[in-house]
Length: 191
Image (tube, rainbow, N blue to C red):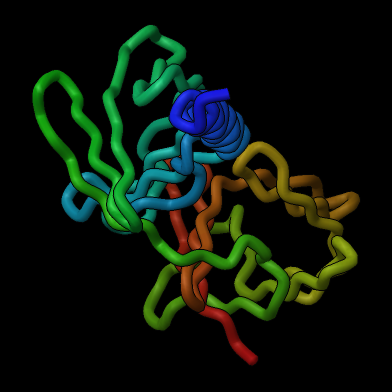
C-alpha cells in the first residue's frame, strides 16, 4: 500500500473525528456562551442553559429571553437572530448590524455565605436586610429561618408562613445582586 495514501486517509479520518468532537463539545456547553458577560453601557448579560437575562449597569433586571444556538447564531424566542463569536474571554455580538463586545465575568455560582446590603442602600420590604445562606439549602433572613434554592436563573427564599420570594440574581466577586419587579438590592459578602 502506498504510504502517502495511508497518511492521507489517516489524516482525513483524524480531522473528521476531531471536527465531530469539537462540534459535540460546542453544543454541550452552549457554544461556550454560558456565563455572565459585561457589555459596559449595555449592562450585564447572563446566559444559562438557553435562558438570557439582561441586567442594566446598576445590576437591575432589564429583560429576559429564551434562546437556542445554531452554529454561531443565537435564535431568540421571538425569532430574532444574533450572530456571536467568542475569543478567549471576549464575546462579540452582532445585532442588526451593530457590534457589541463583552468581557466574561469570573463568577461564583453559589450564593452560600453571609450577605449584607451595600452601604447606603435603602432595602425595600420584599428584600431581607441581612441574609445568610448555607450549603444545605437552609439559611437566615432578617433573623428568620428560611429554605432557599436556585432554579432557572432565579433564587427563591422560602420563609415558611411569611411566604416565598423569587429574585433574579447575579453573583460576581463579593457581590450578590437581587432584583424583583422594579426593585434591586446589591449585597456584599461578609466573612
